[in-house]
Length: 322
Length: 278
Image (cartoon, rainbow over all chains, first blue to last red; front, side, top):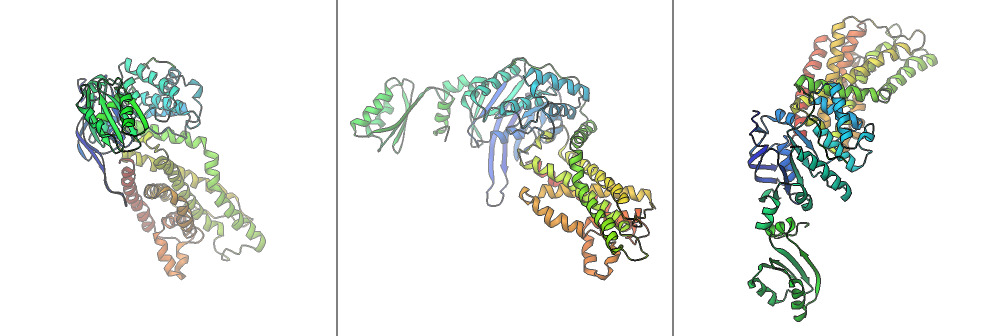
């Protein structure tokens, strides 16, 4: 039961379909997800909003009941051994779920006591964590009168009160300003450096790139690809993606670009062309010229260098931000 | 910003009873902080009631409410007001926080992630709210015992302590469990409706201001009242505190209170678990 060789997370064909409710039909939020996350890893579930990331985290943290497949956390079954799993994980949810009837310090103190710390130990541990995370001045404050970034750090402290073996974070930096986000990244890197296993969900590509050892790209409840960020870029998204929108139909000549060396794919959609190219030099200019030669003007153009965003484009054929 | 990682925590022993006790300690901390505002709110209604009916009106017209030679009106009021205070306080103590926890930010996850099964969390909420109901009920005693005009004192004679304790405790638990059931079934916009359409009629018609047997002349209301849990609390307290006033037989109110507590707790635990685990 406490075999240290057990993976932090292992799922097979994990599914969740929410039953229909009123006029809303059943929602297949997660449709067969396989994960294998060893201890010590910083793992990211990356995908747009509504991809099923939070539902997946919800199942791993025992608050969402799977409707198919299996999920084990630290070798324990998420349904049968829910209480033991809860004892050994820490969870930072997306919303501010701090207890509004308690102060910041009391939030931590009582969390510690729920997990079996004595009152004195819990108070000492709370003070220690608040100091460490630069929150000492907020200790007596109401958790809803502090800034969003501070609240998130308090929630991380709260999740660390009992020294969890796996730390789950659901969209930890959603809605935070860029400065606060990088601060929080530092906090998470520090935890990982100390050996903390971390599983996070994010819809920010740059967050996954900046933090995660391995990433699974999720969309419509399925994993599209997974591996290290470098691996993903070199396999699925090695190309630069150039997108040009014209004010009329895409000129026929552009279609022929697909045969050129260094260009792997040309996608045409009404007035928009998307070119996936390993050798993108000069290509954007050429696309504009080909347009004007055919009497068609350009209304929008963009060039994306290989990144998780191009990976997503290559895998799904749609813009990540759609 | 520090990038150092925290030291491992001190050794912990998270057994179910310890976690349950920690959650009750949290309730005690919150209750202590809000004690005045919470209980003043509960006490206003009964205090105003005894003030008008046991002090002002008797001063004006000489005890128009009571039958000459019978018990004073405050004798009839005492069990009823204690009962309605229990039911109001226990239900509010569970419903108001629950509306926040289940809907706003879903902050229930704070405790749902504690290492206990979710049904035990439901039981904890019921026990905590029942304690508040019990305190609310106890606070009514001094108010009714002390506020009255001369000759209008309630005549209290605790005939049966075990029945008194059982009725107070079971009544509090039943009210808290009922609150949890309603709070988990109801959508938050309906709370106003609950107070206007459910709690107010329930307290007005809960045999607070008259004993149940006095309804003999309005048979349909007497039968309808049997669906009101407050009736059994009022009548149970009447039997324990003011046995000279006619009251229901003990088997009837004990069966309703204890049986009702078991049944409603079971149902509320299920609906709560369904709301928390999706």
